[in-house]
Every structure is written in C-alpha cells, then in structure tokens.
Length: 540
Image (cartoon, rainbow, N blue to C red; front, top):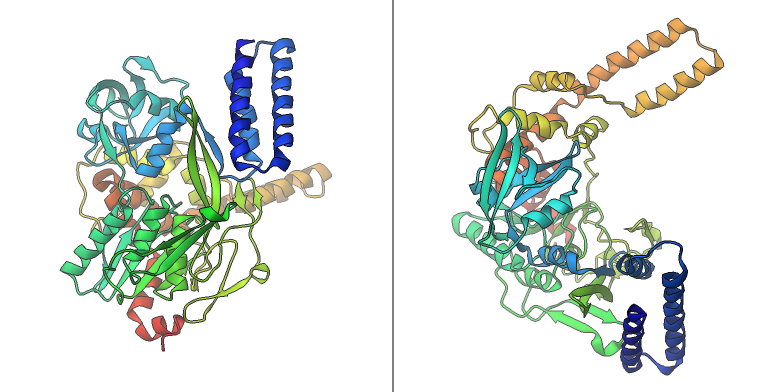
C-alpha cells in the first residue's frame, strides 16, 4: 500500500498544479480520471495472478498516454537522459565509437577521429567480446553504450576479436566526446563552396560561420551549398542563428504559437549577417526535418537562395522538456512554428510515426517575399525538385546483409594506407564478387521473387512441363548475374565510401560521397548560371 500512497500523493500534487493552468470545467474530469487510474492500478497490484513490476506497468501506461498525442511527445526515463543530451548537445563522456550488432555480435562500425577508441587502436570491424570482463554475448547495442560510457578520465578494458588477427586486449581512458555537426566543408568546384550540417546541436551556427569564413578567405566564392539532407533537426535557436548568417538583422524568421497566446514567441535575427549577397543553394530530402525545414523554409520564403532536392519531412512542431521528478523528463510538443510567409510545414496526419503525404492540391498557398507561391503542410517543397536516388535492390540487399562492410574489413586488414580522397579508386570488383560467392551471399530480385511465386503456382496447377520450368530458372540465373554488372558503378561507389571512411573518418566519408553526387552537380550548375538562379527567385 505504500506505493499507492506515493501515487495518491503525486496525483494530489498534479491536481494542485492543474488548478493553476486548467479552467474549472476540466478540473472535475481530471480529478475523476486520476482517481479511476489509481483504482485500476490498485486492483491490478492486489489481485493480478502474477507479481507486477510497478516501474514497467507505469511506464507502459505513460508510453501509451504520450503515444496517443504525436510521435514527438515522449517520456524520457532516467536511463535515457544521457542519450537525449547527446542528441541536443552533441557531446558525451565515453570512448567515441559507433557500434552495431552484426551476426549477433556487437561490432565497431566506426571509431571517431581522435577519440579514445581511435587512439587505442580500435578499428571498424572489431568485435567487442567483453567490457571490463563482462561478456557482451546477447547484449544489445544500447547495452554496450551503457557499459562503455562513464566519467571522463576513468579507464576500461575491452576484449576484442579482430578478423584475421584474433583476440586482443585494449585499455582505454574515457574522454569528452564532441560529435561534429559540420563534418566537412570545402570547395566542390572552382568557385563553389560546400558545407555539410548533419545536426542542429550546440554551436552549429558558430561552426557554419567559421566554415564559411574559411572558404571565403581562401577562395573567390561565387556561391555556397548548404547540405541539410537527412538532417533531422535539433535546437531552434541554432536554426535562427544560421538564418542570421545570410539574412538582414532584425528580420523575423520564425514564430511559435502555443495553446496559451501569451506564450507565443517571435524570433528575429539579432546580429549583423556575414553575407547578404552570396548565392545560396540549400539541399534537402525527405529526411530533412524540424530545424532543417526552418532554415530551408526561411531561405525560400525570403527568396534568399534556391532550395534543391525532395520535399522535406514535414515536422513543424516544437518540443520542450520538463522535469517530472526522480531524474525523469517528459518531452512535450508545446507549439507549432511558422516561417516568414506565415505557413506551417507540419504534416496533419501520422501513420506508424511518419507524416502522411499531403497532395499539393490540398495544401494552402502562401507567398514568398517576391510573391512566389509556396505551400504549407507536409514539408518544404524544393524550388528545384529532383528524383530521389534510391539504392537498387541489389545494393539494398548487400547493405542489409553488411556484405560491403565485411568485405572492406577484410580488404583494409591488408592495406596500410590509400591515396587522398579524390585520387583513390577501387578497381578490384571481381575480387568483391568472389568474396560474395565465398560467403554464400544470396540475393533475390523483385522480378525473381515474382517469378518464383508464378513458378510455384504453375507447378501446382501442372500447366507447365518440367523442361519449361528449368529453362525459365536458367534464364533467371543468367539475368541475375547481369544485375551485378548493371549495378557495378553504384556498388563500387559504396565500397569506395566505406574504404575512405576507414582511413579518413567522417570528413573523408562526406568528401567521398560528393564525388558522384548528381544532386550536388545540379546545385553547382544552378549557382554558376546566374540568369537561371535569378529567374527562379524572380530577381530579374
């Protein structure tokens, strides 16, 4: 009964707080339903046939409650607070290595450059067997993170199994890990600069500003590409400050509207911009969300630059966190944001946590500063729409089975160094093919899957003779071999990216990905064609 008393005390406090913020008409309903909730819990705790875990039962109830609202209102337990801080601050104390469960074994995917893991000689492909003597068999990736993270300066021992070399012991000292939000900036053409922003964590705007000034100082810039593709957002103030770099001081770039009107906010640019004239191309795709949509939407609404790619995710909601006791928090959607044209890009409906696509004809029309038509709801529609470059079924199969990762682990164990990014080329595709055969990689194309179903049905109905079936299977096998040739360039591109990451880390990975990026080529072409650029923005 002691637990029930705590619950009743908490509920009494909740009602007391509610009395301050909720009108009297709802107070009775709140009090009534809280009493019902407590009574249900009391009956379950007293009479359910098995012992109940109060923490688990309450967590189930809380999760169900917040899930009924929107995908972004979440309960953050004490154990999850550290992960939440990583996503907002971009830093934590640990060893600085990304891991993944491959073939039921926790495997290092990528040590971060200069991190404790990197300095201790940990490599991609290393299998973590033990942490301080504790076996990792059967543990999840989250379990490993919990074991290796801790106070900077403390040490830990890893037992690893390195393919081709065997079991090794590694002693590491935990350190402060800062995740780069600008992993790469550089020139992608004679006079066109490029800046990649992967997340809106702390200091994102400062890092963008520094990257831009460095590019401007050392080059004759005619345009700049800001890459927000697959950037899921982050801190609202960082988005505002990034807009401030390229739009005039005192310009309202975003406003937020809440349930309580007095809490509405208006965010204006507060400092002098770094450049009001440099032509801009902002890259987005369907995984660009939240703060990414603020920046791309503001640039579009103010006709400050051209937005290129695919329609963005459609998250126009703002979340704030509240402490709910015992080091737990709740992340609550408190408002919607609106960009300069007055539109909100939030999707209306959700399905499996994803916004449901809204046809353009069902979206309201708003206008940019130059009176160009733009649409609300369901994301930012680019000024230049490009088809999404989806991976082939073959490449998708290779990635899902980690075949490229495994091959490169084997390849890199025999190669000490490679030429710089831009000069390195992978030329041993046939060796990769042999690796797939040796490791019994099985791939079923969509056509093959459909034909297999047809053949099964044909055999059941006995309307095809056996020789016809065997001939068709042989033809399928022949065509299947051609698929590897048809997708050779795409696969080599992914192999090169994985190899470069092993030697040049995240910076090299981003740089290598630009080598054959058709969307970046389109952005370069737009920025170099001043007439087309100005025509899109109706500037002449």
